[in-house]
Image (tube, rainbow, N blue to C red; front, side, top):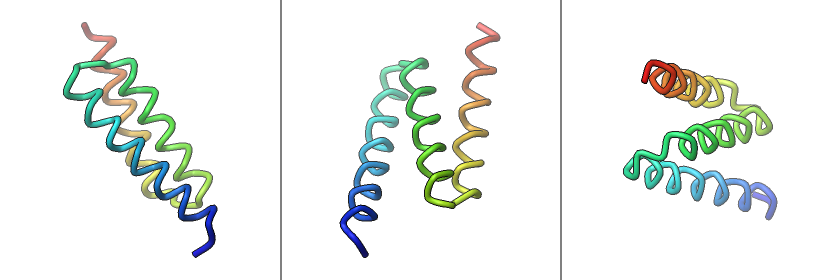
Length: 68
């Protein structure tokens, strides 16, 4: 594994940790930002299945936000 791959993996893990904190704090805007960043990471790395999972979660949260 090259350094770049390792750094990207660490970065996405950090995003996921921050996502959990944003969810605990009910920071919807922060949650959406992180979901979009994680989805983009997976698109860039070629993992379309994971990208779609995070994109769908972002859409669900955005729809929930728009209902309130």
